[in-house]
Amino acid sequence: MTPLGHVGELAGTYDLVVIGAGPAGMAAATLAAEGGASTLLVDENAAPGGQIYRGIGATPLQRRELLGEDYWKGEALTKAFAASKAAYFPRASVWQLSPDLELGISSGGRTAVVQARRVVMATGAMERPFPVKGWTLPGVMTAGAAQILLKTSGLAADGKVVLAGSGPLLWLIAAQYLESGKRFEAILDTTPGSNWAGALADLPRFLASPYLAKGLRLMAKVRRKARVLTGVTALEALGSGRLSGVRYTRGGKTREIEADHLFLHQGVVPNINMASASGCELDFDPRQLAWKPKLDEWGRTSVAGISVAGDGAEIAGAEAAAERGRIAGLDALAALGRISAAERDRRAGPVRAVLSRYDRGRAFLDRLYQPAQHFRVAGDDTLACRCEEVTGGQIRDAVKALNITGPNQLKSFLRCGMGPCQGRLCGLTVSETIAEARCVSAETVGYYRLRAPVKPITLAELATLEKSESDVRTVARG
Image (cartoon, rainbow, N blue to C red; front, side):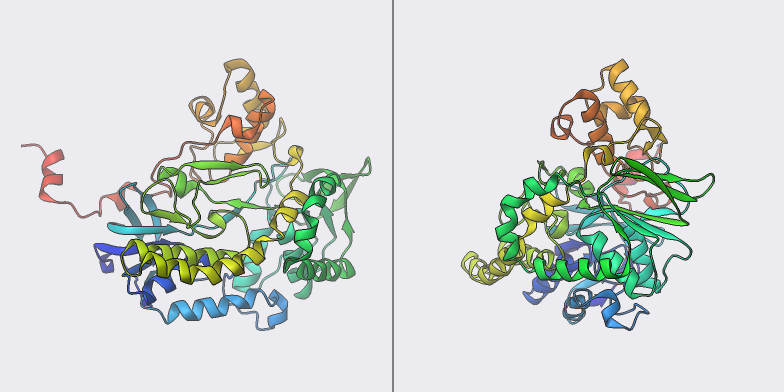
């Protein structure tokens, strides 16, 4: 690969621009560059790997068993990408992707616009919001943030730590922390017991998937070393000024635990902001309780030339993300005329076979770990939109008093989704809270209508854009 360090090093046009250097992005860029396409991969982080392989190649944790064997699968992907002919622009943000495939890219306080013939978005996933009372207190963070601290710096939170929530990633993070020598005061499992009834129909396919043995090993390892309390039905972070404890309800009884840190997690959802702002149509997935881009079998969106691969398309894990990246890369090569459609189909066959194996157990996991509705909506005195400090109670009052029907109307009255995060963190919470207040589904309520800039950009950065004489004449007097 050819690393870039400044927007001035960007070419004006590329055959393919890939956004995001996780497993899907690296796989797509590597394959496309090997196929002869001029390829640019843009990523916000300092090194490739995305969230799942974050710190790969640079992590100070040298005991490989600490992060688990699956983490080190990222080495092969990063080495293949490093050996490719793709251009790689780390520490750079894509703040705009227009339907005509024009991208705004910023880095180091300067910005530039490049033109692509094809774009693959591999923007990955984000943790589902977990809006419980006190979740904004210092000392409370997402479990994913705690994992990043461990992977990139080899650091674990000190003091008394409580982990709460549900989902496969929760068990993985717990195992990694325990392997590093850290102990939990308790792991509070909020998985609803009633979910088992809905998940059983998908159990046979899960038994044939690679997730079964992996999951059982992880859970056994965690249960041997930590106190796991299942059936938690209510949760609250306690403290004045910072976290001092956690209150939870289990079996109808409410108890408290002292805690210096609380890690929250209840699954991950596709990061759709870039796709939505680019005009791609979205679908609501009732199984994963989240919106995702509307795609065909090659990962193409409703906007010509734009594809989505990896967990940004549908939550399926790192291995599946890499396979979806290869499929999107093959389709890009065919669309660019580098390979024929017949060759694309032939090479995609083995990739789809591997992908199918990883997809076998997904439905079971999705149904088993669906978070309960009361953990997806904000309570009356709980912040839903953290940027604008809007509570669940204020949203319900607005729905009742102003007949608010969806999140886009709500922006006008409460500014939800208009802060620095542009709705990335509160989108699902706001939609689900409105839906609960209206007694309809989140799908009926809809999602924020997002626009560029997708990431914050200053006027000073915009002013660094190269301007033509025509641009200057448009605004200059005389």
